[in-house]
Structure formats: structure tokens, C-alpha cells
Image (cartoon, rainbow, N blue to C red; front, side, top):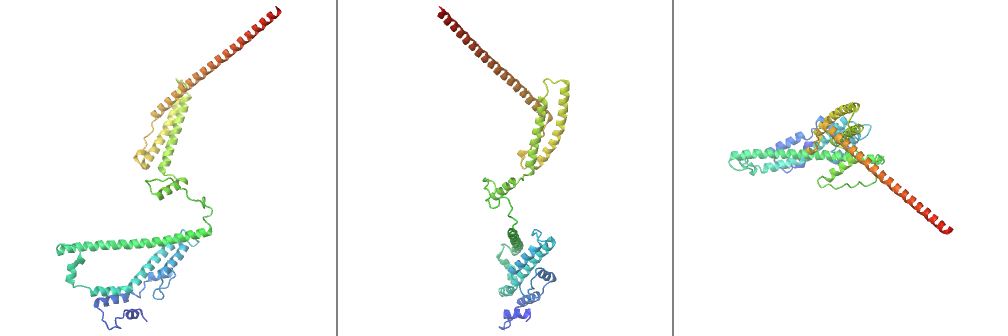
Length: 368
């Protein structure tokens, strides 16, 4: 039995002796003309997913989804299979969406006739429908017409947005199911057994009330694994470089006498020239850092050779003064220690003299 006869018997319009309204008849003819036709691209989509055509055996959405997942596991670029092919996976995904759209049209085809008849029964004359505008708007007929047109535009935009949102949700659900299947297959193969920290709970990081907990935890995981933003790395390099330059100037100034002789003055001028070149390169790095710094308070200024030389001279002068004070302190401690030793020797000599004098007095008394 043909598709047209099945639809007529199912509707029962002729069996009950009823006649169709002209609008219902046109809708029926449009449904009959569009029902059994399957385009070549849609036929190829069914064949690509290894599904039967709807006029032979309709496939349920679950079967379509199962077929899509089966094909995606073979051709997905991240599946790790030998048959992985990005272009083929794109074709499979396009065929999956086309089949789903065709099935949704087939499911809504049965109810389209009833909806059309209900609309025909409750349709109003043309002039009344023109004046009603579905109850939208206020004012004169021309004003209500403009308001109704805007209402239809807004409604069409909302319908398009809802359709796109449903399409994205369907694609995301299919992609999520595919990713979950790939993860489960990798776990069954034992790909995750050698991971560090397997079987251990994730450390709870310090709570930050100004950041989303998930974002905070992800940032902590990146930091623990050695990741640092570019501006932090650049800032650290600048600090390390300026510390090395200042240490070089300080050591060079400390080795020189005060005042410097001509040979030491030439050495100091040569060192300042080398430092000037290093500061020029460092200032270029500072400019790059200022371009990527996330906050204005983190901006840095250029380093000046004159300021760094003055800083090194002051530090060297303070070091010399500290060395002099340390030498004076050591000399004073040594002087005090020598005085203590001398007093100790004087006490020993006095004790010996007194002991010898007492011994002589005792012998004299004994001889008497």
C-alpha cells in the first residue's frame, strides 16, 4: 500500500464521509508530495551512518545516536584509533544532524494535518483577522499594524534563538557522550594507571572569596605544574637581571681604593660602559613588560646608569665605613685582651714574690 493511501486511511476522512476544507486539502497534498521523497544528500547521510531509509524501516533517535557514536569512535581525531580522520568525522557529524532533522520532520508530519484543520475551523474572515492583530498593540489600525509587525519580528528572532540553542545542546550532548565513552575506553586500557597522584585526593587549596572556586583550583593546578603567566616570568627576569647588575657594580667599587688612582679609574669607566649596555637591554625588557602587565600599578620605570652608580658608590662607602668600624672594634677587643693578660701576669708575679718573702721570713725565724 502506498504512503498516500496509508495516510488517507489513517485520517479517516473518506471513511466517515467527510469532505476536506480546501486549505486542509492543500496541506494534505503538500504532505503527500513531501512525505516519500528523500533527497540524494539525505540518502547519503543515512548510508554513511549505516541506517535504513525511513520508507523501509524508521530508525529511532536512540538508534541514530548509537550509530553516530559508533562511527565517531572510528573517525574522531582524538580517539587514538588507526582510522582517525578529521574530514571523515566532520562528514559523520553533518550526516548525524541531517538525519535528526529529517526524523523530527517525520514525527511532526502526523500532527500537521490536525493542526491545519483546527486552524481552518477557527479562522476568522480576512478583514477581522486584519483588524485583530492577535490582540497586540494599541491605537489606530495603522499603528497596531506596525506594532504587530514588530511583534512578529521579535517572535521570529526568539524562535531562531531557541532553535539554535537546542541545536547546540544536542551537539554538546552528543560530544559529551563521545568524550565520556573515549575516557571509559582509555581507563579500560589502563592509560591512566601511571599518572602521578593516582588514587589520592586532590589537595584543597586556600579559599579566595573574590574568585570562582573552580577557576581558583584550576589556577593552582597550573601553578603547581610549573605554569606561570608571561608577565610574571618577565617581572622575575627583570628583578634577577637588575640584582646581578647592582652586585657587579658593588663588587667593582669595593675593589677600588678611595681615592682611585688613574689605573683604577680606567677600570671603573670600562665597567660602567658594560653596565650601560646591559641597562639598555634591560630597559627594552621593561617596555615589553609594561605592555603585558595586567594592572597599572605593576608598571615599571627605566633603570638609570647614574642612579645605579650612585647607589653602588653609597653602598661601597657604607661597606668601607663598616669595615673600619669592624677593624676598630677588633683592635679594641685585642687591646682589652692584652691588658687582661698583663694584669693576670702581674697578679701571678705578686703572688710569687709574696710567697718567696714569706718563705724567707719563716727560715730566718727557724734559724734564730
